[in-house]
Structures are given as structure tokens and as C-alpha cells.
Length: 183
Image (tube, rainbow, N blue to C red; front, side, top):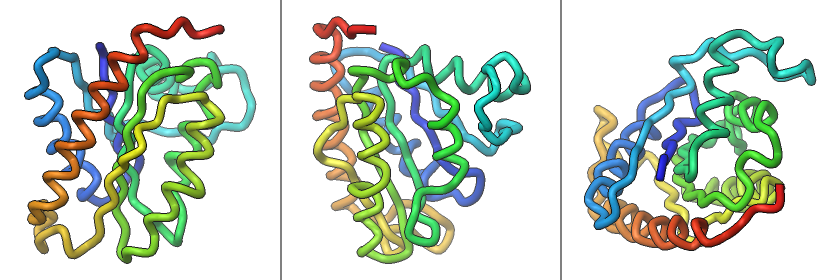
């Protein structure tokens, strides 16, 4: 399966650190998968405003294509001002609602306080439910204390939760192969 690990921000490094860790765990699974980390900071993003997809710049078209062609996703997002970043929401607005249907998704998020974990429940999960994604129940939320001042993951419990999430994600990928999406 082709797994897209989406870094849902254009600033900061903690979400990328989490995706690097998850990619390592995915590569240790018994079933081999193709993985790609997509950093939004590497794309010239445009505001999604309802125009036809072919009217966007090449970076936007490439990003949309990569998302729509993936079989599964790990989405990493920081929490800014009690919300997911506008760049991530903009990307969701660009993707066809049918493109992610019945595809597995795991979520990792990072915020400055422990209370912001509810952003995953109240903002990100409803968007993914609209797409009819198969969202794993065990997302991983991290906060500043889980990282060194250089942005390195230092918390062993977080590593264990990321490993566990990866195992569940693998099971969801297997389940998704048996579904025939009604597109």
C-alpha cells in the first residue's frame, strides 16, 4: 500500500519529528508498504476557492494528486490558537470528498498544552468522517514537554503509543483492502 504521511503545517518541526518516528515503525511492520512524507512547506499552496482543479498551480495539482492516489494516511498537525492550521484545512478543501473514502487514517497532533488534544476530536475527526475515512481510534497527542529544546522526541511513552498506533493502523490497512468503496 502507498501510505502518505502528511505534515499539516508550513512551520515548526515537531510534527515532522513525529512522522519520521512513525515512518520508522511502519517500515518495521511485517507487511511492506511504500511511504512518503509530504511536507506542506515544500509546496506553493494556493487558497482553495472553488475553481476547477486544473486552474490551480502545479504544486497544488501535484499535492492533490498525491493525496488522492494514496491508499492510507498518517496526518500530523500542530494546534495553533486552539485549532488545526489553516494550511491543513485548505488542503482538505482541495481534495475530492470521494478520494479518501474508506481509506485508513491515523492522527498525531502536537500542542502547547495538554487540553488542546480535543482539537483532534472536535475539528479533525469530523472532517475525516465527512470524507468517510477509516480513522483509527488511538490518535497520539503530544505537547512541548515531550520534546527536547532542539525538537527531538524524548518521551518513551509517546514512542510506545506511536508504535501501538502503527500496529492498529496496519490492521486498518488490511481491513480497507476488503472494502469496495461506492464511488
